[in-house]
Amino acid sequence: MPTPDSGQVSLYSVKGKLKIIDFWASWCGPCRMENPNMVKLYDDFKDKGLAVISVSLDERKAAWTQAIQKDGMPWVHVSDLKGWKSEVVKLYNVDSVPCILVLDENNRILAKNIRAEKLRAFVEERLGK
Image 1 (spheres, rainbow, N blue to C red):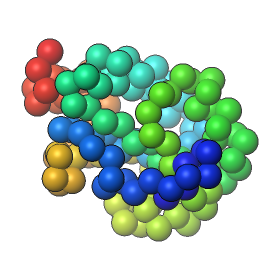
Image 2 (image 1 turned 30 degrees about the horizontal axis):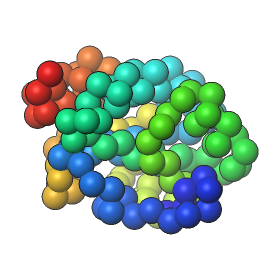
Image 3 (image 1 turned 90 degrees about the vertical axis):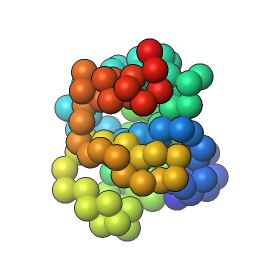
């Protein structure tokens, strides 16, 4: 999928002991409220093997990239700018945002739609404190 700098990233090419795929959008209030929690989680566990891949359902590149900068999200971001018509939305059966998937290093889905404290506890359990 396309990155903000017009590169390409496969969701499965990102390496990590534990991967979070975060479906979100700049226009999604609950997503934006959750972003500071994800930044903290990433900062606390990136050196222990946590990878985060954010998949935006935005249709406007400017709104998407501005939200990434404003919310200070330093991990991998992708979007085909097709919104709900994106193939990846269908692939993972995403029906609302925010939607979080947690995958193991072999890309098996371990959990779906856990956030905040539950997500932190799940990550701590697998990667240590």
